[in-house]
Length: 220
Image (tube, rainbow, N blue to C red):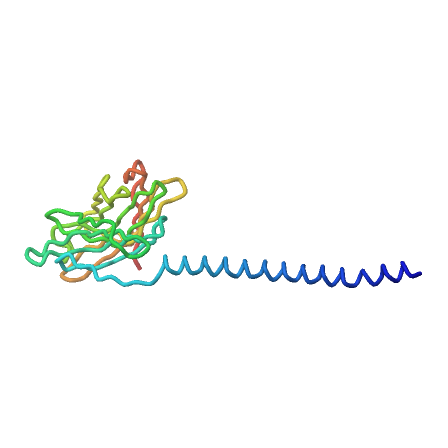
């Protein structure tokens, strides 16, 4: 009897000791998890802090569209007008995640150019859609499609003319790797009256329509 009672007396301290050890380990585990997530949040917050940047290249610049790239940076497209000769070019600015400029590109020539949208493609390149013409402000221009490599160098440029004022507003890469573009085309008839039509194009990976004709939809 004495040995049995003695054994029972020993069980209680052992259980209390095990509970204490378990509670200690659980608290330690919870503390480690809290510190881990706090550290991750601190690092992420430092890496992705807020910022604002005024970009000035000595021209009249306008940003039109911004896209977050797959490297957590950003790419901006717009137009830059020369103060002297009023020539308008497409401007592309690539930023890292902290808003630091990685590279800038001006695209265009003697004819005015402006961009409405840029998309990153599956091959890490970029596709710009907009318009190009001698007198864009007077309604004389064509739809322009420009493909850039990951450094902003022009791979190819396509101009599509429907004999009116044409512009591209949006571009997406399709599942088959080709491109679909939407925009509009319009002409001036009988003075200032304008007739507009929505424009939807399906192009291949080289920016060509191939055997398919561009679809013209009546703009209501």
